[in-house]
Image 1 (cartoon, one colour):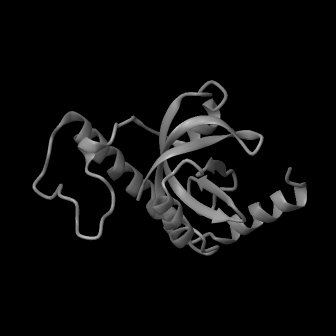
Image 2 (spheres, rainbow, N blue to C red):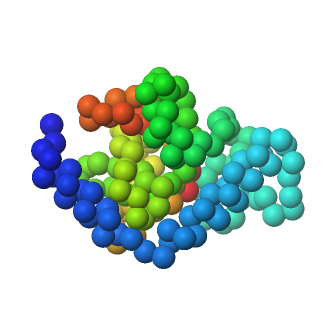
Amino acid sequence: MFNKELVMLLLLLTLSACSKEADNYQSNQNSNVFEAERLKSGNSTENSNVQAGDTTPEAPELELIEMMDIDDLRLDMESLNDKEVRVRGKGQYMMDIFMLTKNDADMNPIIIDISRLERNDRKAILKNCSDVMRKCEVTIQGTVGDVSFQPGIVAEKIEW
């Protein structure tokens, strides 16, 4: 459906969005994994309340699926077909395509189908993830499957 020139343009635009945020990604991911483990085990801290303006549902409302490393997802995509996964990365919405990468310099995006997300979530993606120079940090939960004739994730939930 897409020609090679368009795919190359998308990849070049993704590469041009490199910034200093790539270095901070790993430390943010580690803290998110710790937070998921803390919520999964039922431990709480005094500062675990949702802050004002945060639209992310509280942990008890979400079915927690173990966070998967984006590189492991890429490597095991074929064997994970029709399985539910949860992965965190940098999202970018461009030309009706939502892509997830490990960091700003990552040239191997995973295509995400956002059509099943609620309208407010899709609107938030449009507002927060359309800047070619700055990607948004998101956690995607969904099912591995075909998206635009290639392996990807059909998103069911998004966390900011």
